Length: 442
Image 1 (cartoon, rainbow, N blue to C red):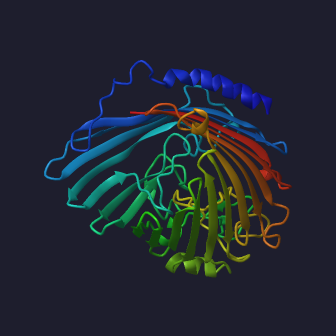
Image 2 (cartoon, rainbow, N blue to C red):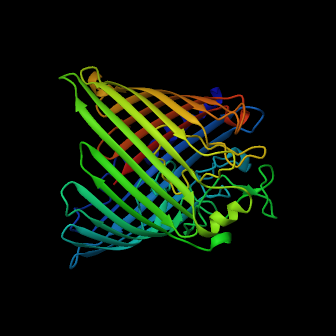
Image 3 (cartoon, rainbow, N blue to C red):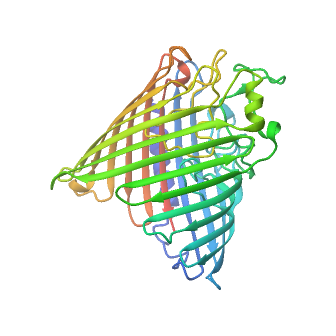
């Protein structure tokens, strides 16, 4: 792994030029009632040291977003933002040596008008129309490279009930890193739905040379009606439903309770569950092939924090249900709410999904370095075990050791270092991975 660390060091030295230490006031900002310019600049380096003779990946990426928002007039305002990701000429000519998510699906840099919206407020009710960020458990603007997932949607948010947020949204299209057919263009939610199902040109199951099925070719271009209620701070409850006609329906619930045990210790207990099932045309398509998309997730997580030492320990468990004929749509619209992160798993042999029936566990220890004088910095160490159902896919269990360092260097500048070492008898999942990120918000 030495070559990864050498390139990582060179990246950190070079990306310092992107940190505008001498010009933080070049771009003006303002409060919510005045027009202002906003955005971020981000530099990243991602390296993947693969085993089994597969080519290693080494990818620097640079970019960010530049946006503007008008002042409020009669309760309405306009907002737009342009997103860019580029390689500065440093990308490998061999696409196999380029990270799969830094750029577009064809691994070339791209840019797009990611936000363009009209919003209005009346009391504690807000309307947002157009391209926007969207935050929820299953549909989510998740930024794990330069450009995040973005959505074309019509969103209504109400906060009239104390400590309660009600959301009603129709999400029509999506762009970003969790899309199926493109990252750089907005396409219908049904077309961007990423499932575990791979088929041959004749529609038969084919995990060797097949392609992931494009659901829009079966049911047409469909959006998602998302409804959610989020209540309270402690305890906190969230209930969401995602309905996409002829495609999928997902029901999601989670709860969290914090308790102060004494002057030194506090604890947090969390639980989650969701259920996915196919609808209409997609359900019929699967049934004709002896398949289904009916599965769920159960999870529990506990954390114990010791304030004087700045140390928190945690344990999380997740279980995916389903059977050997189940097709999954795990994380298909950017939402990754699971307490234990599931790596993307490839269906093999005659299986439809490698996820169903799996048990996931993760133990963590978090060090708040502020106790030692390093304000707004932390280090997390983790160990996870991904236990794959042997009757679904044999010899594919994965053990993951993680180191995650976060630093809020200033009010606008932050850094992140993530290292994963994965071990498995299945060489697809045997690798060492590092991601470095430096971000400046303005």
